[in-house]
Amino acid sequence: GALRQSLILESDNVDAMRAFIKSLIDQQRNAEVLSLTRELQLKLPFDAELWNLRANAHLSLDQFTESVASLETARLLDWATSPMLATLGDLYLHREQPQDAVEAYLEAFSMQKPGVSHLLRAIQGLLEVDALDGAGELLKRIQALERDDPLSPDHGQRRDKLAARYA
Image (tube, rainbow, N blue to C red; front, side):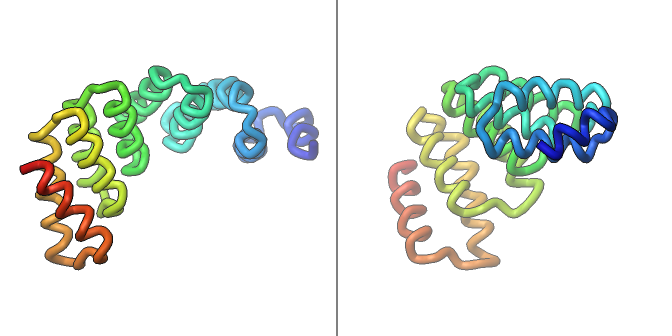
């Protein structure tokens, strides 16, 4: 309520608008989130967080194509973060577009050190759609990570199972 009042008094207050959008997300009012982020993006088109908020709101509404569009737009504007690109890879796997998924994963995992769990999940998804080249590429990435930081026993076991399935 206070944020609404603040926006009535200062409709150009970007910080209040951003806080209001986040409160709507907490309330799972995703249709309103989409409307407000679209409005705010007219003022801040290069804001990666807004693209991410839109993508997540679309995901919550099972609008996968629109979510991909938001993430790809952020990617093309060169504002996509590593987690956004990893999510894009997941969405491409969901849409059975393994080559696009591999490209998104490799870009995401080259930006920052990937979480091993996410990397293993990506490999498993690629193996499920028979994208062997991509799965092999990500298995190499895990081996490179392992040189610097040994995997936990659970992650090592899961990696071994995926490597065996790959072979």
